Amino acid sequence: MRKVPQRLEKEDLEFLDTTENQSERGQFITPPEVADRLAQDLSELSLNPIKEVHDLGCGPGALSSAVRRMDSTIRVTGYDIHEEAVAKFNSRFPDHGRAYHRDILLDPKIPNMTAAISNPPYLLSRRIGDSRTAEILETDYFKSVSGKLNTFSLFMEIALRELADGGVAAFIIPIAITNLDDHKGIRSLLVEECEEIRITWKTDSNPFKDQGVAVETCIVSFRKGRGEKSLEIREWDGSEITRRREIKQTEFDIFPTIDAVDLPEQQGTEISSMCDIVASGFNWSPDWLEIAGSAPPEEYQQGMLPVVAGRNLSKDGNLTNDISINYQYLRENGGIVRACDFDNHSTNRPRLIIGDIGTSAIKVAYTESPCLPMNSVKVIFHKGDDSKALMELRDYLMTEDALIRLKKITPNLHLTKSNLGSLRVPVWGDAE
Ligand SMILES: C[S@@+](CC[C@H](N)C(=O)[O-])C[C@H]1O[C@@H](n2cnc3c(N)ncnc32)[C@H](O)[C@@H]1O
Image (cartoon, rainbow, N blue to C red):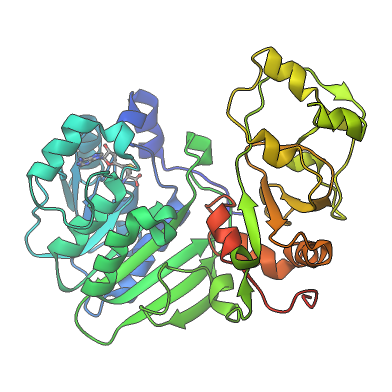
């Protein structure tokens, strides 16, 4: 697999050198290889030759530049809230482009649009603020979101509403849009309005990391229309499409990964019907004392409990016993920074301790000793305290099948009580 260097064009670097307060506007620049992929999607999806592309939140013009690299006859029209970005765009494409200084969330109408490209701002409700939220909702334009706004869904809704029939769009956008409940509205609108949707998962590293943007992104591109519906899920390694699957638009509640599409449906009983999953851990305080070696069980009963974090779970499914802290001491000294169900964890009941999932394994250990889980750690009790069943569940949770179902389907999500609980274990003890 070719490693693609993340580089920016001269005009974009010049712009970044002179601009300030970018994070307030959700402003960062799309590297050329990603921009080229978006432009390519437009041309592949469009049934007619493209004459003009509208660049929503155009910045200094990295996406428009890719469009013109692909086809120098295409006109580019940009919109941005930032005057300096608009000026840069206009100096970059003097003969074949024009950018407008416009807040498209308050003024979203774009007549006769047949193609749109966008890396929208990724601002969530807290950053948008109450008064701006009220201002946007007052326009009564947006229907896919209510209450808590995020700017990327709103930009996508503008494209979906403003495109003419047969019009195409390509977005680079946070992967949350594919699977979080908060974005159900925009997914429904996509499915309703589009005949063809493509979700492209990127398997190379985050292209915006060197601009300080930690959000993982994917590419969502589509053709609006009432024709036969299709949804293609693809993987792209930064240079080529490496895998693709065609699915029905309504087959999944979320837009899945290819791993999710390829998984056979699970049979059997949900974990939550046999087990109780407890998630009430607590946060670590940096000034807590650590006491080496595990305390003896009698002392556990008196409040001396070792604290278990993901790192204390061994690969073979046991707890390492090299870290313990004096819980009672900490409690008496105000060291507990978050409530924890002490009775639940100072028990000898058999249970599984599950550390948050890494990219290559789920860490899970069996224990009968009292211990306190850190906040990200989950604990599973069997309703009938059946140790054998718990051991078998532990073995299943350590398989690739469980890892894919819990992590690779929704790579942006942490392990939660509900996704753990909805996992089905086909035949206890019979997992690969
Ligand atoms: C992630 S940047 C993308 C810039 C450029 N398109 C690129 O891909 O390199 C998002 C852009 O949207 C602009 N923006 C933010 N809010 C906006 C709004 N309400 N209306 C128009 N543009 C907006 C920002 O100023 C910023 O330039």
